[in-house]
Amino acid sequence: MATTLHPSPTLRQFYFVWPLIMVLVAVLAAAHRRKWLVIVLGCLSVVSLLGGVVLTGISQPWAFFSLPTRAWELGLGGLVALAAPLLTRMGTKLGRVAGWLGLITVVTSIFVFTHDLPFPGWYALVPVLGAALMIGGGHAYELRLLQNSLLQ
Image 1 (tube, rainbow, N blue to C red):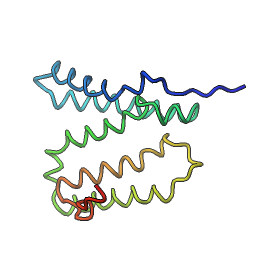
Image 2: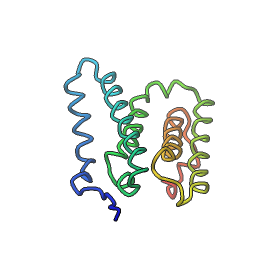
Image 3: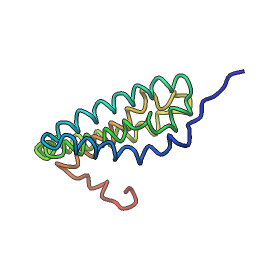
Image 4: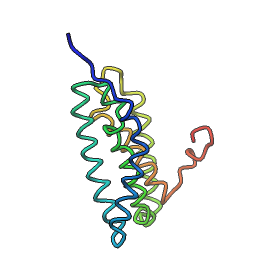
């Protein structure tokens, strides 16, 4: 008889732990805050993504609902935020391309992904990277379509 792993209620509190980790890193590395935040955020994101990929094959509900295995999505958002000073210099044309490419990627995943795909796993990279492209591209060029309050 096979058993299915289900996320522990204590692991669901990860959203409270994540900001504390970032504050701790910022305090400990005050002199080079951005550099250390990028390093820690990048490492935590990679570990989280790999954990999600591995657990998707073992127990898809655990991988989907467990915040530690989805923390990389928050991490990527944090990395985009930390890259904001660089992204503002990318130029309107590149920002426009990144934003629209991201939007197309997210919309495509809505129609292409089916319930048969082992999600999150590697497939989660598609909509998450698309969202990162939209947000990152928006620093140089705001997509008017995304300014619509219904879409926000």
